Length: 298
Length: 308
Image (cartoon, rainbow over all chains, first blue to last red; front, side, top):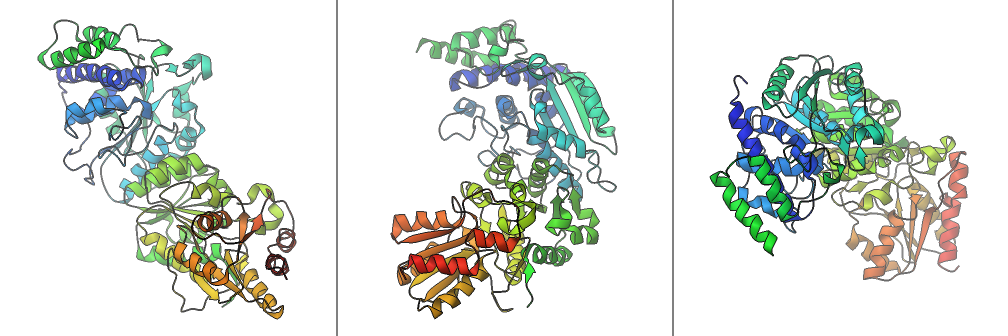
């Protein structure tokens, strides 16, 4: 899409970071680091890229989004609420009994979620099936799939990576499929380089026949431009390697494996929110700050 | 009607159904000549996908196809399908993605290839998952109808098919009913509930038992999940003794399902005939004899069970 309003997208991503910290604090558990690393990518997808209608989540011509690194679903829940799939005030039901906002994406519980993910490694194969199914059905919709960098240690990812560029040939090449690798460098047990280095990851995807692009995953303008390029590539699926920072935007969470899967306490969330907002809190953020201050006193 | 392997009847049915419904696609992992989808692939090359030897990817791909309006048959040996349990659990069963999972080469009856190719725990695994029925047709007539049913069924479903030929137990006018047992031979002394490969042997054993003065009822349990509880309770109530027969582990398969039902609702003496090992190489007849799944073995076990 032409001329994205970068300032608008950055504003949404900032709000997303605040809401991620808020919902994880209420939940008392969850994954802030990866949610904060992926939020700019999801913002670019939900607010300047994908075609969908929140009032018709099963609209057949919608673009599909599969968050294969399902533990970072708070970032997606924010985007869905912001886009109108459900009211924003429902975000704080994350992980609570009876909530559609399950700890990992749940297609059955929440309209607008396309696949059940969280068991890492499965999302790409499902997204590929969707891309192929859409082609076979003569639909022009596109499929976006976000993988984690630790996740690509799963064998099932490479089964799909190997067949993706060949599947559907010669009539239905999967050039309607765009993968984004959220390369934040950290997985649960520590740094990806130390656990199991995935390098040379660009060579790997390239050698399997994918078109590979590389971006700064926190520069929404760059990310958006890469989606433009990906749409223009015919005959093969695309993998965008997005270099990101785990915990991006909250100084004490950035690049610290501790914050892969630990919820902030109210005081920590407030500190993070002030950092994200920079200056004075805008109107929409004030009730959240008051709410978390109250939570901190209980 | 000649004996035919249920995998062969499946392949023929799919070819036929594929001509009528463009949504039907196959996904294979380099075993299409064995799962018998090769004929479909030849007839409809644009609707047959071979992902190479990659069963997890095959099942995930099928889930995505199902979620975008296709009717995918994901096919491999039962042991390889069920080996990707986690993908079935999350991407198919939980998601209720209407994937048609096909597991062929079930049981010790595959013979010489031995333990690593024998599907002996597939029903046990899938019985633990909500949302996914298990159907094991008894012969070619029933297989063709079960495949047609799977196409119409709105959710995921698993068909358990044999490598070996199956003697016909139904006439051409038979109508498969999902979720219903099928009384093949009435009797009064004992109910033999059988599924799949050894069903014909159970029928032959009932003939032998009659000569010994034992009236055995033989019931075909094609839908192993959900179990036809009323049908099985009626038979057990009539005869007061139940024997289950399956070419599958007795832990978690038909025998377990029947044991769970009877012990909760109608405690009835029960004997389970089936496999208790990983299997091994050998000739299929010899393996059936070793595991008590041949006609003589079933008759012998039933005689002992009824105390004659």
